[in-house]
Length: 303
Length: 185
Image: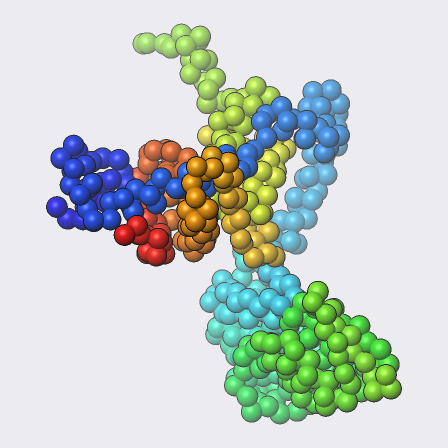
């Protein structure tokens, strides 16, 4: 008899007497049985259980002031329902089913929007959009950094607190961090509105607002480096570099006698913390100390 | 024209209209699904992520929202809510199943070598379980550790019995492969 057939039936406890004989004659019959016999070791109730109902009740009552659904519920529900209706109307018109995606430190995710546009979200960033009305109004609120690949269609807006980017089907990167707003266009045309000015970027052009100062530049890259697990900086204040390092590795950096406004040009990889620290401290002529709980101290040369 | 006697009709209606907000009904639901929900979470996500708390929280949510949820939907509500709570927590932590090892109290007759090998076997087994897909692991453990029938598991997971059989079969083969080294010669 076919071995797999026997095992299948054995797993279902459906072996006939004759089949049981054949099964026990298989060369690894004992081994098979051993695996199944030992499954019981992992039985949930040997190690953990859910509270019984009375414990649950006690737990619930201690958590909330118990909602006595009988006594004062009735008058209160009238007030509550008015509030609910008001909020309901507000949300129906202004806040229709907003979808939110958020990343934490050292996390990057890919998001697909309702029209198949794609967003790559860097660490400690978030995007929010209204999926219901998407076709007619493609608007994404961004906090942090993301790379967008927009499908052709209606106007597509990326809104940040420091500026707004409008496109019609292109690929671009938007970076919004502390006092740092940067847009890099990799394909097509994007329109940037920030600080009361409007700028149009074509593929290969970049726009940067650093501490309120505008600078424009060029890029040959086909996409942002952070998606290849690398962060690159060109004449950027050191404190921004440190902030990005903290985001990518989920560490905390303390500085001693270091001028964090000095400009840094260079980069670091997201794959090895020690190498990354070397990469950013050596050019700046500072040293670092890394202890096991992912806390880093950076010393200036005077130390 | 045949009329339903009012008594008979109301008896029919009673079950359908049972309100979760009535404590008796809620307790019934709790006792019916609590263990299965807990075990499901435990097998899927491990002990580390507090399956007891999440299961409890799901029931709390059910109670707090009892007005909006019909009795028939209670089970899927509980499982969905609890699973989502877990997913949220999983995002921030690496999932390690951490099933405890057995106390070897009753192995006093065995020699130390045997005990050690048994322990190694169980550690390997646990690692192998962690490497199964969630679906395989949950189905396999609900059947072989908890002793639930395929039909019961199918109901809990909301899939067909054939799917359950397939998952257990795949799980078994995967485990066998990983535990190859422990075959008794």
